[in-house]
Image (cartoon, rainbow, N blue to C red; front, side, top):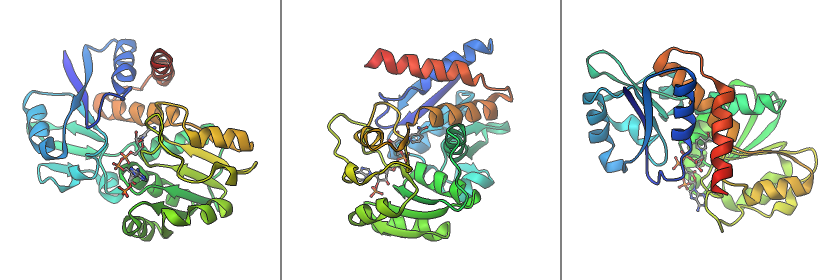
Amino acid sequence: MKIFGIFGDPIEHSLSPVMQNAAFRALGQEACYHAFRVSRECLEDALIGAAAMGFGGLNLTIPLKEKALELDILQPDELAEAIGAVNTVSFGRNQRIVGHNTDGEGALQAMKDAAISLRHSKVLLIGAGGAARAIAYSLKNEGAEILVANRNAKKADELAASVGGLGFGLCDLGQLVLQSDIIINATSVGMKDGDPSLFDGRLLRRGQVVFDIVYNRETELLKAARLAGAVAIDGVMMLVYQGAKSLEIWTGLKAPVHVMEKAVRDGLKERR
Ligand code: NAP
């Protein structure tokens, strides 16, 4: 039985275990996938331990995606290096630990499913963490005009500069929302009940697209988007596609995307 898993902190909210276990069952694989609470300080030891125990592969989530690149024991592939974050780890020969990133492809596929055209669109990306970095990289490749806003404005400036966009602090959000075609929330705001909105949802309008990559609940932002008549996309399909890509990296098999989507949607229903 091969062991797979996700490392992060907090980790209780993750639906990756139900999604990946459903996929392994559908593929007839002798494998199981668990969630492990791992802090930044313990990431190196946890990765060495997983390699030593013959794990089949891992996902990394908050707050580990950027931290992973600081570790000498991990070799990022070209994409993870360019993005500056790792969300998928595979184990090669001699316990070689390789970092990959599937978040950007997952986000892109979710927007393509919703028939969103990115070329020449003005996209406001809120956040500058691991997920935002991957999305910014994909947006650049698709030819979008990118505005990045983040609580830590210096990080927004750095990320924006790396993709030819402009960086801002969150105090500029109102103005930025008005001038944007597509608004993407790639912060963790919205994950918890009672999280405030990042900006006044009444600024949204019909014709805009709002993509909130938070997937565990209907966020205030998505509620405001629907109310305004904007196109509202939640984080479920991004989760499914990034996980499908991870599974393909680990196993070389084609991921059963529909099985994975059903497992996530059933898991969400059970929690509500
Ligand atoms: P991360 O690297 O820890 O980045 C967190 C981001 O959220 C940073 O930009 C941070 O700003 C911002 N932030 C945190 N608390 C905030 C607050 N109170 N007010 C304003 N901004 C705040 O995390 P991540 O891995 O990028 O994940 C971010 C979110 O995306 C999480 O909710 C995660 O579940 C979700 N996600 C979803 C998928 C999916 O497949 N649907 C995939 C990946 C991630 P500072 O830089 O200023 O701290």
